[in-house]
Length: 567
Image (cartoon, rainbow, N blue to C red):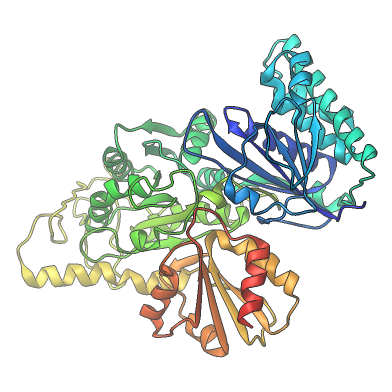
């Protein structure tokens, strides 16, 4: 039987069995071999036990999104979670360890394999995931030389006997995979793609971190919190090479205030956190608004309230970013949906924060951050690092009233002026004031920045036919799934409007909406936060809100079915 040219492989196992490691090795080797690949993961909030899974797609054409279908399910654990069972069909081949006892898999198409015994032969159960890796490579007949070279590379810091054990484990799995295909009359129809050679494999975690480096970030203070921690740790790993000061603060309050202090001293600083951590930073955001300090905030969303589902995905913190901080002051909210956009927006976030002296949010989520896909190499030279700091004189006024609302920002010892800040309302000279007329002038000055910010907005991208009747709307990580669904539908009456910046909202938004007979907004939250915000800003009510908030992203099949039902 011939499998199609877009294969979905899911590896499932307990926390601690190396499911994520297996997934990472598989996608990287497939990329090196010339295949289009995509991967994402879902996992429980525990160090050991439970059930974690990774999905890997291998396709003849470009792919970058999650699908429900499972062609091959490789089980490192005898457990199946309910949501995985819903995705298994009669076409799914389940490969499980013959050592598993009392499995209730009679209704499925199953194949027992000696995973544990082959792992034991290689050196122990720790090699179980490596045997599974080999099975996948064997199914696709990947060149063994390429696999061995990669194994040697990633374990280059290990003793030779450890490297040999890993090679033995992957070789034994490779033979199991080849025999499985041959003995069951199966074959795969995925073709290599020569365009893959000119692309890189990246996650948004890496893209955000690299964009921050390219934007001149030289200071980060944060407290670890999934799924934001990967950006923090990546910058820590690169800190020596790029002269980045990295501080794991005692809590998020301290992290935010350290960042503000760093900007005051002339650094380009950021924090990386998630919803619960950002809740503690909010007073600092308001402080940034009053002292007109730049700040870059990477806010990685996960389901709440409180701890919620700490390792799952959601787009539930848009309102938090929009309305955090007491008082009224400008901000910018960027919402990248691809690794390319994550890099570019993170890079420019520092220029925007510096130029307009406002907090700039990079709003991501667990699914988008931790997915791997192919993309064009990042261009660090596309955006120039711009310096907006002025040299002060003895008459320097930090909060000078200006026509455009932007006061000259100096830093200590750069010039002859004294750089003063005050968290109370203040005059041009930074001294506290109770002058109520001056209070109005200062508020108006700060809000004037909106007019300039709107001139440098990232406009939404329209994908599809310009003469659409149905307009799909999405932001952030819903982007690639909707784009792929649009390709499957192949309907000229449907187009997709992708927002990579939500605030300030593009003034062109209303024209796009009014042109459509039917509008549909897709969001990973329970209330349609962006659709509600559009109504608030434009007066336009989105016709349909398709919402998902169970901790999982939209699948391509789900999107296609939802759209077809509506039209």
